[in-house]
Length: 123
Image 1 (cartoon, rainbow, N blue to C red):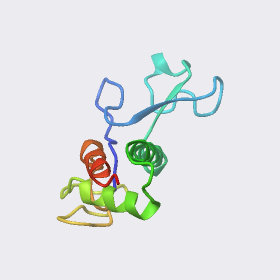
Image 2 (image 1 turned 30 degrees about the vertical axis):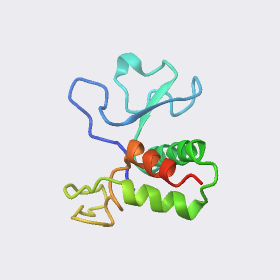
Image 3 (image 1 turned 45 degrees about the vertical axis):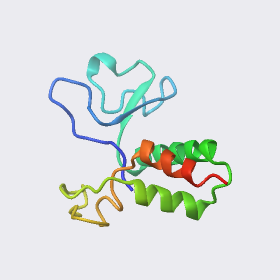
Image 4 (image 1 turned 135 degrees about the vertical axis):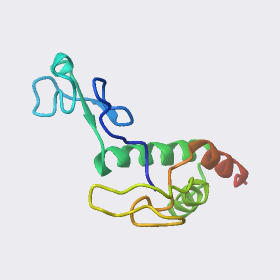
């Protein structure tokens, strides 16, 4: 699966990236942020380190909807509910295509659709 990340929008914060709180005076404080915002306890991130917390949060949400789900069911729900992404290229050169691919996996995680499926599976 893939989550929302994006490219730097000229003159603006990096749209589509994830802004995370970081420790004051850490090496990560201000990462990818405009100079005026660099020392305010935040950093902007993308890639697998940003996607993993999105996936974990969605898995936790699915378990709140249906606590009986096991890891295989969660994976199946996320895959089935994902929206296919068929355009674009990763930083490593993997190209998105129709269906499951190495660039975006099953596609963009669709939280609403996944929660609906988890609810339907409740005993």
